[in-house]
Amino acid sequence: MYIKDISLSCFRNIENAHIELKNGINIFYGPNANGKTNFLESVYICSTGRSHRTKNDKELINFNSDEAHVKVFIQNENITQRIDAHITRGNKKGIAVNGIPLKKSSELFGTLYTVIFSPEDLQLIKDAPSQRRRFIDIELCQLSKVYCYNLQQYMKALKQRNNLLKEIQKEPSLKETLFAWDSQIVQYGKSIINQRKKFVKDLSFKSYIRHKQISSNEEQLSIEYNPSSDENSFEEKLFNSLNRDILSGSTSVGPHRDDISFYINGNDVRVYGSQGQQRTAAVCAKLAEIDIIKENSGVSPVLLLDDVLSELDKERQHMLMDCINSVQTIITCTGIEDSVKSYAGEAAVFNVKKGIINREI
Image (cartoon, rainbow, N blue to C red; front, side):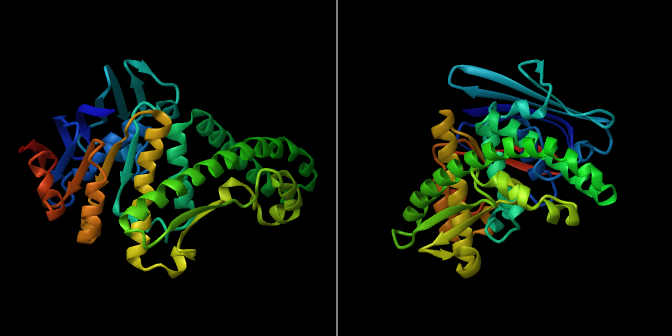
């Protein structure tokens, strides 16, 4: 799978652009705050239906316009597909595939597979658990519409339960109505826990292989799933935490409290790992994502590297570049770093300045 071309109209500071991409490495370089990340963001929206930078779609529209458009053509073997995203100030974002509007943005998952890697992702190990849950959820939603549906339903039921817990503080008799939300939370939560467990096991194995190559067999990376409850005891733990939940006005047990841990040679990387080890573990996890998508979907995802090379030392830059030859890659950088110079002759190179994108090679 690869992107053939993409057109943007009034998307952030990019007023008008039509870009033909290479099925290989594509380098977008230029000064910061000139539109490189905006371009990557437009690709990501056509993959997941949402921005990785903001929850407010209005921010995606150029200041001088009331609407923005993104159109992407994807090639998957002999099949060409078109994704259209239309963002307006007054209405919800509209997305269509091959001219057919989608009822929900989540229906887009699985049309265009992407793996995005930004400087923030290098902090995956040190970040809050919510970021690691998001890391898991984005990939699982791309791979499984069932998981995406279960997650949406779980979060809806969780919100309703938390609202009801706060009402029970004022009106204790409402406690009897909690069962309606509890049953949904248990139903969808068990499925989420089960799918996350399988995913993290696969992620750990593939990250282990990647890390072994990188460390010349000197270090062993493993990733463990830390659920707040396993699927067998979830219902019991939810029931036993009821009084505590009423006091706090929030649900203390469930997939929304899960986490994952990274270990090198048995030591917790978050606690004992050097910054280099933490970053290497994050890189390996991202590379493992590519392997998982390939294995489960049968197609290669598009890799989006958003100015991440400048955050890595030379060794890790070359390590990352050596691993991405088999997938279409879009790289943003302020200059053509040494790590990509050797690929520049084979890559498509674009200069980005003040929202204008020009192809140089």
